[in-house]
Length: 153
Image (cartoon, rainbow, N blue to C red; front, side):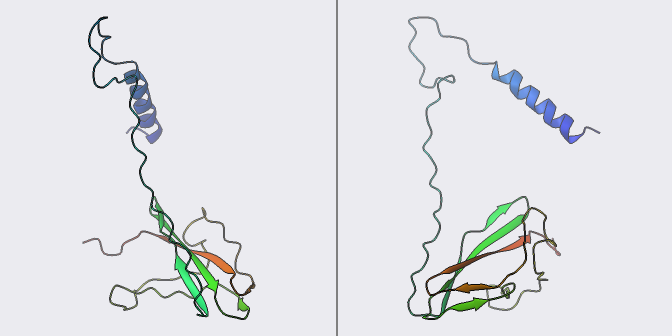
């Protein structure tokens, strides 16, 4: 059985060998080709989705905003922002309460753990601490989960 590192090494060697390959040089006086592999044309830069703007306070007590989910290798991170829109300080202490709902509003059968240690060691979790938000201030937190399935049929 070939190890992962042996396969990567073989692939890298193959790519390095192929980089020396190319088309023959056109004789002088020949018309230039439309596409020169040694001088590639620049591709247009993709348009990246922008973060949704932070909503302005409209007299509500708080606004909760979700950023796009960051997903890589099965680990998902959902950044959240809680904005104090009230006229008084808002005192927070502990992990945020979370309830996940399906598209019809029914609760999903998921286990919710406080902290990230049950999911990953890649996200540092210093634990909760008291936070006081003055009017107009934000608190940031993240929901972290793995993309796992119990029923794959």
